[in-house]
Amino acid sequence: MIEILNPTELPRAREAGALVADILQTLKSRSAVGTNLQDIDRWAETMIVEAGAVSCYVDYEPSFGRGPFGHYICTSVNDAVLHGLPYDYTLADGDLLSLDLAVSKGGVVADSAISFIVGDSKPPESVAMISATERALYAGIAAAGPGARVGDISHAIGSTLSEAGYPISTEFGGHGVGSTMHQDPHVSNTGRPGRGYRLRPGLLLALEPWVMADTAELITDADGWTLRSATGCRTAHSEHTIAITSDGAEILTLPKQAHS
Image (cartoon, rainbow, N blue to C red; front, side, top):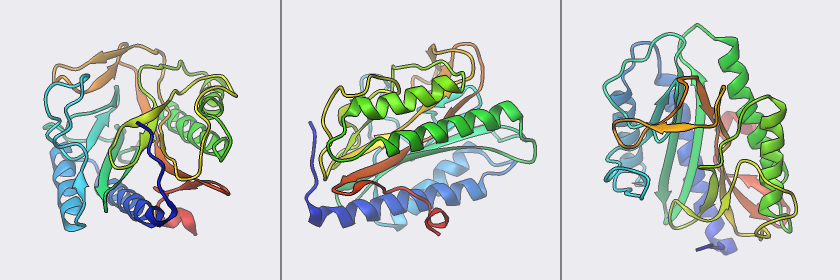
C-alpha cells in the first residue's frame, strides 16, 4: 500500500516528525557512560505517552521478529545495527549507540534514527562510519522530489556508501510511511537511477542508510530481534522521514537546532 497525504494532513506529519526528533535528541543528551538501555526505553515511553502519541513498536509483530517487540525504542550498540531490543546493558565509554524511534501522532507516523558515540572516547573509524551514513542520508534526500524515482534515491545513497568504502546490504532499507509505519514503496540502500516508483507530492518516505564496517552479512541475536554484523564489526544507522512536496523534499524529523 502507498498512501498519499492531502495538503491538510501535512501539518500532522510535521507534528509527528518534530516529536520524534525532539525525543531522539533528548535521549541522546541523557545517554551517558553508566546509562542502562532499559532506562532509555522507559524515558522514551514517558515522552511518547506525555505527548499523546502512540508507539509503533510495542505491539509490532512482523515476520522477521519474534513476537511483539514489546518496547518503545530500538537501542543498537556497537555490532548491533537494526531492531536492537533494549536489555540490561550499561553503556561504556566509546560505545557506538544507534537509537531508532517511530511514533504515530494525529494518525500520522514519523520514523527516525541517529547514531552517536557515548562518552569521551571517539574512535576515528566509528566517527567516519556515522558520518558516511549521514552523508548518504542527505544525498538520498537531495535526490528526492516530485517526478524523481525511488531508484534515484537508492542510487544516491548507495553511491555515497560505496565511495566511503562500506559494503551495502539490501536486506532492509527505507520505506513509505503514513497511517502505518511500514508501507510501500521499499527504498533500497543501493539501486539504479530512473527506476522504480515515481515520487508524488504527499508521499512520506523514511530513508535509512545503515552500514557495517566490513561485512554485508547480518545475524539475528538470540532475542529474536536484534540484528548484528556477522563479523562482530561496528555499525551505524541514520534515518529521516521526508515529505515529498511540489518544491522538493521536506525533512520532517530534523532536530530544532538544525533549523537555525
